[in-house]
Image: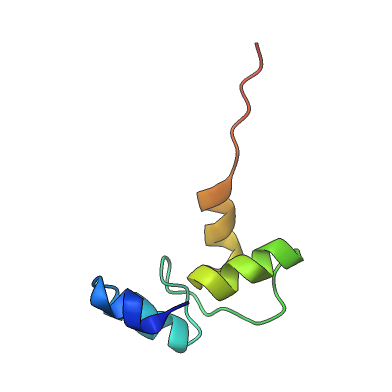
Length: 65
């Protein structure tokens, strides 16, 4: 995460949450090593999102014909 860019575009609160080991979406404490796979761990390093919020945000909905 690039802190200076995030601050410049108005995400000060979210950056502060991540620095406090809290998810910027739900505010829950994020525990290192609690992710289900390497992709989720990488996404955490980018966005700071916990596993639950990642699952909610990136869920794929399949529609069967």
